Image (tube, rainbow, N blue to C red):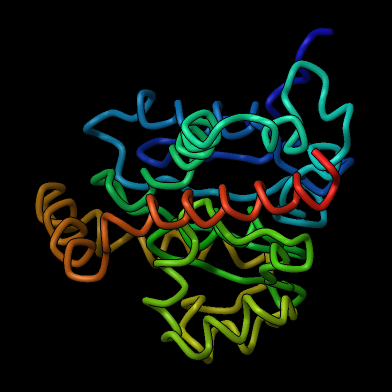
Length: 257
């Protein structure tokens, strides 16, 4: 059966590259095809690009993992997580590592990356928004890590950025309870930089990018690398994969696999 479209659209406007999650009919739920398309975006960037702006089409940024990935049939052309759970650890690790590639480049490229979040950003959606340098939230934004309710853990690079922004205790509380974080709380906690209605996003982007455009491109890229190395733990992605493999193995056993 043919694979479904990735649901990712890339558009260029001057020195800004816009990455749009474009499956509004399912609230921009993500599949492996989504992750493959996102992982290819850095290859499309040029030295003239100063920013990458990420947003979702429709009422929600991203509802997270396409729930069909948790069913035996999965998504057409893709393997379900239930199938993945039957693999050995090395194969599961390779699958998760490929998925993580869609989430890890946002802080490593020299361009400033900005997530514009409206409606729901759940699980993989929350982790994708956290991957960016800056996050803008609409008043209706609802952010949540719901993986533990599925017997899983966040494994797409979101644990490190969340702890960096809010500290261990608050990050644990948000992830363990799976509760929703509102826009105002996201700003207060430092998850998001500002709350603004979508109608104000264009002007806000111009105000944000004006001083960045005034700086030499190399300086902004070097600054990102310095700040990123101060906060990042390169082993965290491996720890996420290892924890998820243990969860998938246990889930397989519970299902009698």
